[in-house]
Amino acid sequence: MKKKWFVLSAIATIAMVGMVVFENTAAAHREVHSRQQYRNDNTRAARGRIATVNPVAALNHSWIDLTFGMEVDAETLAKAHPIYQETRKTLQTQIKEARKSDDKRAAMTKLRESIKETHAKFNASLKKILTEDQMTKLMELKEKRRTEMRKRANQVRRSQRESRRHR
Image (cartoon, rainbow, N blue to C red):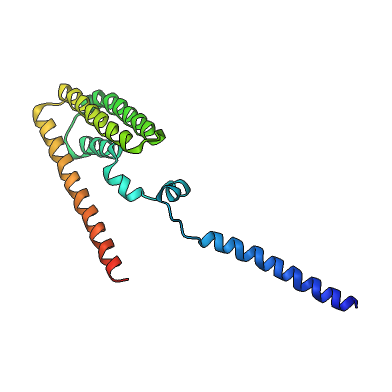
């Protein structure tokens, strides 16, 4: 009699453990149906896509171009540094406010407009510091980088489309 109870309790225990393990495994592999839920669960889900259009990243690249891509003296860099810092803080604040908004479309429209205004102020401030030749060179480098990023993004999209076709 004791053996039967022992065997039955062992089987029940194994079944319960199996159910718990199965439920946790199934939950881990459950398909996410909502993009919003996926973004909430994976905060860095679209990192590559955001990096191509991120205005802060573009500003950082502009600083790199100014520092290493052009022959600018240390004094000019020292004058430009606070402008870059201020613009960077402004852009980060604008992006955070847009992410907190409930109405994403309106927030993105407002964000685009505020980014354009911020870049206009930024370029006007840089024009006071840089010569015309330096400003032209900086804009050329920025445009070159932008076209390279677009090419790269288009290649990624093209390869994703092709991989979807071959599934």
